[in-house]
Image 1 (cartoon, rainbow, N blue to C red):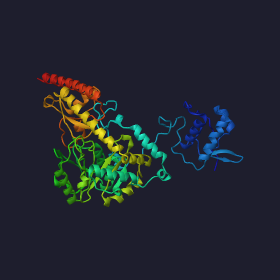
Image 2 (cartoon, rainbow, N blue to C red):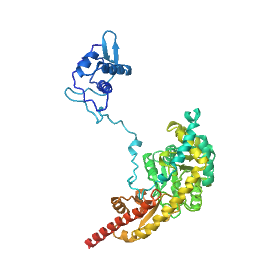
Image 3 (cartoon, rainbow, N blue to C red):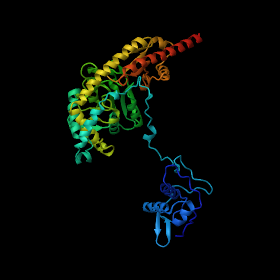
Image 4 (cartoon, helix red, strand yellow):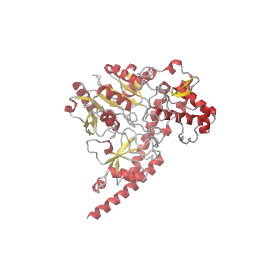
Length: 510
């Protein structure tokens, strides 16, 4: 093969601050070879010539060339010099003479996007309309400042000190067996769930559990039933999979689908313990009816145990899974709100005839969560810390809800009616008819509240086909008592100004 030109009379880009001369030169030469500016087979000048030409030390030049040779970009020929490997094909065409190559902000050639799948085209962003800096009245957030981090650190440290080689190796796709045993015992005792440890699969949370279930049970075009209003993460997932989503309206007893909707259905998604976002608990007759219909039409039910463990009076309502006699219910629980969101641990309780398929899929994707988190969580449950933490937080959340209702009655009574719920981290506040009559909507109320650094979420955010009542969702669990009082007063001022503006507009129309 004929030798290529070895002209290196081009201007190198400036060296970024903080980057060593060796790394800078190596990266520049590597990129120029990849984009075809330095051609395959080209002979490089000697290290002395390069050092003179670019005002670098010879040691820097030699180190950069040696590394590029080790990576396969260059090859040395005894008695002849250093050449660009003849076997390299450029990643892009060489730039035209006199024009620099197209580059991204980072300095790399601008890539072309590969062809996306239909799934990628259907995936929509899942965004909650909240600002992290606003504490009142953030939804779906536990009181993280009250989590016993010191105790958790002690439990985790003890576990790490006693970790074995087997712990460091990992576990099977179902998860750490002692944790599964602890969850089976706890969920039976607290939620009436009937299962063995072998039926439990550890996941990162409800979203992964739902994603795994939907991918294995639903294909594009299949009918899926879900509550409306309902959890946006479920709707976004089903939409991405191309499912035909059928809304189940709600009444005072929870989801109320007609039996005809179950014909040809592939999956039902419900939050019976504490409906997301309306907050009601599905009645026992409704649960039994839905289970009977699911058995008749051979439809699996995904039971999302949304916030139901935070029940303020009496024990948490038993799970629907405990009533299931035909193996139709997939139960999913999570520790990400009962503990802390970054823990990323939850669990599925699966019917035995589905277990093998879920484990195969799990092994091909996330494999299993880290044992270095699973093992301390197991100890935290078995040593009674988890149960004590839940009892403490139930009492605190009940006090915060009571304070919110009391302050709302004092300052917001003219504008909102706050519901006194039995469980959860947030409640619903309905706009008064006097506000609605002036044309004020939940959306306009939320926008005005945001201007006063208050977060409330319009109930319509959770609706797809059903028209939402004019109501907003208000979180209280993560809001301290002082912030609740201040937040209610800020919200009252926001709604008062909105009411005055609406009245002025109505008078102007007359």
